Length: 131
Image (cartoon, rainbow, N blue to C red; front, side):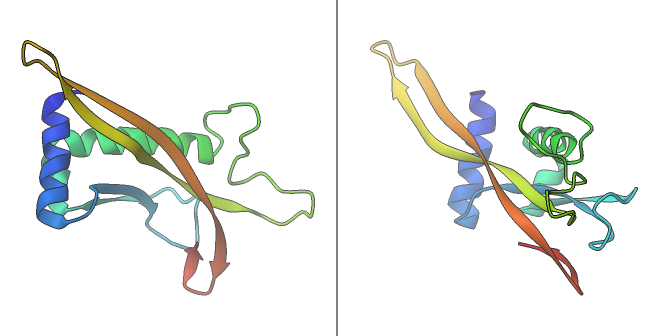
């Protein structure tokens, strides 16, 4: 873990009382595969930070998996049909499962982070897709 990134995350936790968040969402909530996407940062000042860029790159990698641009065995694309022939969609996001910092005898800080990916199925409603 790069300590300046950790410091930025801790700042968000302290000031906002929640985790930093980024999402790359379709501009049209009815068209998951549409050509236009919108960057959403929370808090908004992350948009101009290196940490915001890291969050963007991570979310973009998940979108590549979700939309089938990048394939991994056993991970379906948003546009794959299930056995019933119905379209399916899901959203995915990274989570921090555990984070800690230890100090060595000479005072060096050693961060440790365990990450995960979570997903939820999306349902198409008149207002767009929601989970």
